[in-house]
Image 1 (cartoon, rainbow, N blue to C red):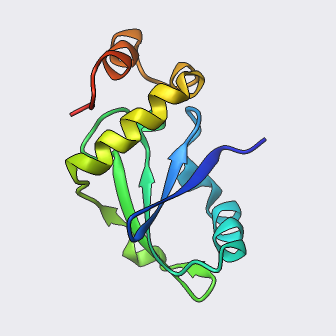
Image 2 (cartoon, helix red, strand yellow; image 1 turned 90 degrees about the vertical axis):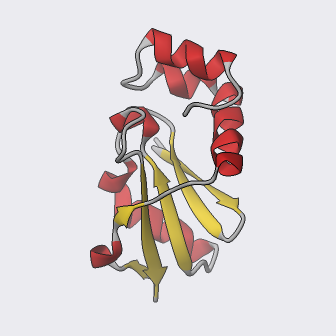
Length: 117
């Protein structure tokens, strides 16, 4: 069963979690998928469903030469436009939100609002 989705947004490839499982635990599978796309560059992980809406929600890493540069992982700042796109993605995939660590009130906030701050 797949535990993440790859979505190209702007110049970045985003790894969207689709359940409470942290996609960082699946780096080998993610690397395999990125190699299929022949992608090299920055990869942003959205960990909302596994860590909540915390300061560690977004991580960025470089993917070069078929692998992640493990020392490159760091917190990332995401533009409001991209956050809005992600909110719309989760509104369209409410089943992912329901299979997360998020509280019912947080899920409702995502569904009701244009963006989760």
